[in-house]
Amino acid sequence: MAYSDTILNAFVTLMVTIDPPGLAPLFLALTTGMNRAERSQVALRSSLTAFIVLTVFAVAGAQILALFGITLGAFRIAGGLLLFWIAFEMIFERRNERKEKSAEVAITKDHIRNIAAFPLAIPLIAGPGAISATILLAGTLSSATSRLALIGIILICIASCYAVFFLAERIDGFLGETGRSILTRLLGVILAALAVQFVADGIRTLVNS
Image (cartoon, rainbow, N blue to C red):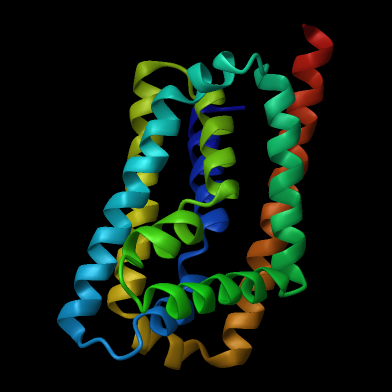
């Protein structure tokens, strides 16, 4: 696979897994009662936290796996299956239901305090799927230049989340219920195909080793 195609696949994988447009209505739900300045603070803090978390896994993901004695091939298969499950949930609209439950719990227990860290940054932005995808992509993009490119991709995806949060009210009104449903299903199909590719690459790596 060409280097440009690998970078494009990495971008699509992370963007679809994080799903910035799908986070807009949840951000609005979590920040109910806040003014624009307070929402901007929450958006910035959650975005920075998620970026730090994903960057750590992009840089040290392989070392974390080695610490537990997990091979990259095995993690590719496990991560691919996890991404496929997320895609399944997206296509059948189960992922949003699960996220909305997380949002409701946070509002009830914490009264919107510390929502930038939980549940916005973790697990809504930097969730298990995004972390798994980041480690898998870091294994593919192993050179220093490629790793910097991966961090750049993470930055772009997180910046997209921040932009979505900043424009959440307008985006939610523009997409509407039908638009969100169509976009979520379309992204789910794309993620499912990428997940299958991860599993295939993992099996190939295990067989070759």
